Image 1 (cartoon, rainbow, N blue to C red):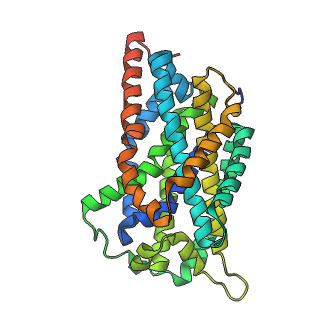
Image 2: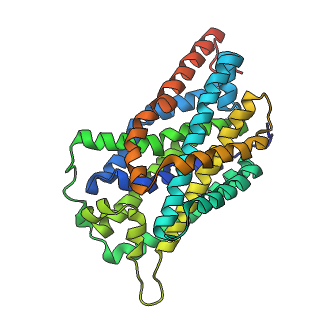
Image 3: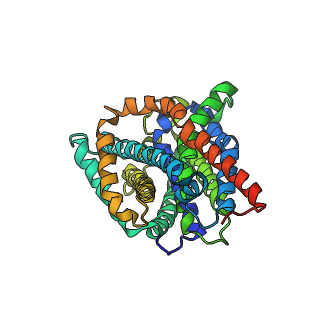
Length: 363
């Protein structure tokens, strides 16, 4: 494994971007003026899952997720589980690739075939992946700064057209409906973050997992909720629900005099950067899993085959944006084994082994 370490700050940045990346599918799950409540509720619903990931990181300091699996389940059992998570990472990567390619086609390049756009995004992701996790962490930190700065600018420029009264009536939807939407959004925004354990092999013992996972996910959730609130204040509940990409539509309204307009193009750039970062991370994670299966530390030789599988699956995943949005509800159930059941199994076995060793750390 590459001996270069990733700082806690940069790992947090990757998590923040993974959470914000889910904002693209917000149009499939909007609850009008209650959407921001569903987003904040994710922090409560997924807290046990976050604590589970933190515990695994504490039990196996300086070890990646696939190393943990092989140590706990052996060469055969660990290989089967690793293969399952590799398939999951490739699947999620293919969904990300098509989601952001579809967004580019719908909003900017209506006459352009989607496959060339997918190829360009994939090539950029492969380039970042070849440079390694450490560079991905630095890249993520810079993108976080850019997105926060852009949010602040667009928020203040939106103030003249905001109507805070759009937030009422609050809790207009039933609690069950809010919880259901919160879980569905969370399986993409938070649940997929469990793959960050793959990069824990690049951390130092002094880097406590809780200081990485909790701030990273909570900051991402808060930024997500604030973005949805801004969109609500600008568009109103009805239009915010109807818009497939509400952030793009909200920023499109901004116009300052005759010299500052068409800011929605910057939203397109932000979306592409978010998708590119998450896709790069998933390519690295999947390639590391394949490298583990072949008992080698050189994951980079598997990046191109992994990328080809990703784009092949992406090309046949959905026919249009509406199918992409409809699949979100299916995915919320499909992801349960990968995000909850299998990590829970790994944790239970790890705790049993830790108890047998009489230690809080398994080395």
